[in-house]
Length: 142
Image 1 (spheres, rainbow, N blue to C red):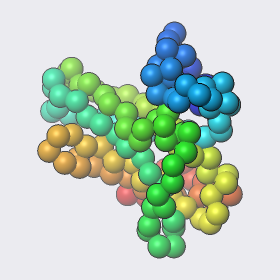
Image 2 (image 1 turned 30 degrees about the vertical axis):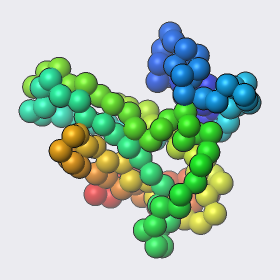
Image 3 (image 1 turned 60 degrees about the vertical axis):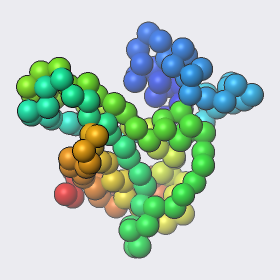
Image 4 (image 1 turned 90 degrees about the vertical axis):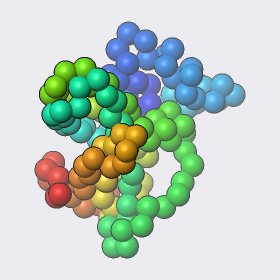
């Protein structure tokens, strides 16, 4: 999925406005065409009224559990954090997180998604192993 298509889903009605805040102005049009992989995260919160919860996702090598540090246009657009304001005692939502294109991963990888607040990590989940951009199952392993 392109960054533009992700932003249209993530920020309905004001995608380009949000992307102008996030992407480098020197190659804005080119950055819009950058391909990434979308991870859908279902989040259910309970007891976090009037607080913000952040989500971040990172790709890890499945054999070593090490996350390579890479700079990419996708990371500039996504910044690896999505914030959810919780205004009720419990809330469920689905968040769309954008990662580098997993089809180009050099070896089998997995995605770790973490929910955290100002006090630390609240929960995390690992995806099944992804090989050539295809996951074995949509369910998380933890």
